[in-house]
Length: 580
Image 1 (cartoon, rainbow, N blue to C red):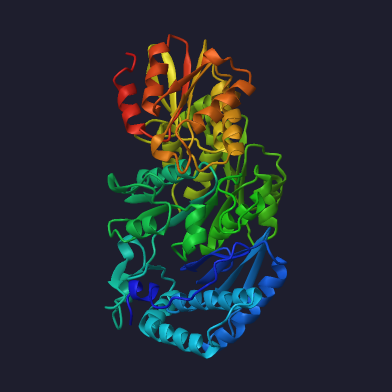
Image 2 (image 1 turned 180 degrees about the horizontal axis):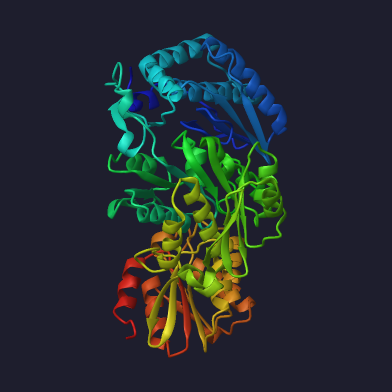
């Protein structure tokens, strides 16, 4: 049995480098994914010199004899066309994922060289090399353990060199070269687990559900874009919204209830990190990070997010936002049976759910209402939920509804759910980076991590409803956004109706741009929104920009600091100036 680093370098296939025929990505999916419930490998091609459909048909045709040579002829290959190319997915056993990825690459090699009229290696030579990789990768004990776990209703977590069966307090982990003959199955079990995805709101919803678990007496934990946390201990900081965060969390034996924030990138690169969860939540879907892995449209993105449904166990719950039309449309195209939530009791999905006795949640007369399918419970007044800023932050009413339904799906009591909604705050302790409020010089200052048009529009619309004498805003962007994206993000800021905008450079996030390029685009967009030049200020960094705003604040003012860098320093600076 070979180690993963050996398998990664086991075979070099000389794929042609031609701008008209590009194998853009080839990767292993270890868990449920966009294409199905099982693991496999997927490749993405970009084609601009041929008819893409013809190229993909040839690619698939070249793959067939390769799979046959590897004993995988029965694999149900899927293709997913997109503008300018297509993805090709091959389901595979968990101990043949490297081999299958190489097979996809080899099929592309024969496709591209054939179309370009280039000399080709003999098929038999490549087939022999692929069979050698297959033999190196084969791990029958791994396959049998995972199959037995599935029969017993026990989840598995895979990475390149370790296997975990069960979750948290019910888990055991072994190196893949030291797998047991027969584990103690009586000790292995899953724990209540929720998956949370969406374009915006997923971090707040993840934190709320974990807090509800803790309030019910469980040792609760979460993985997220900020950190991995078990109980009160932060295991590590960083963006852990992918499979690495899930493994770090679910391998901690103290854990009794888990919540995984699941990002688009992780789903597309490696599939879902788990195959069994009691609840999955999709908060919303909006344009963000389009153009990667052939996901070019918002409906495409909705299907990626809905991949979480494939991990929900029988009797589990898929919680979806009925106020997101693209999500409603995408769900209609799947086998999903959602638990819907909405800010309007008359939304068709809510009306239908109540008539059919299906659980759901909605906002009615200023209160969060949940139905278990039999009766409705008026859970809490929105005015008593600090996250909602007295109801102005409607996006956080949605997050509260999603979290409350998910918590019920995990078996948590209403008292714990209600308590968290009444006490969880938008501050650096409970919800860092999400509309965190400070009082400085008699002014209200909000710090938020909003970074796409949907999230910026949500927070600025909420804060625009708050009274203010003057309004200030700090804005900056990373360089990997297009010019159009940066203009759209800036335009979204103007729902706040700012009197003064401070534009900050983020030198750590230039990402190929020249210094001053992003601020120039923001300044121009601000002028186009009607702000005079003398009300558009420049800052060398987010911290510098925050200081400039703070120095100008007077009682009755309001400031929104959109912060992507130096957040800890900005929190410290604001904390030292809090009004008594």
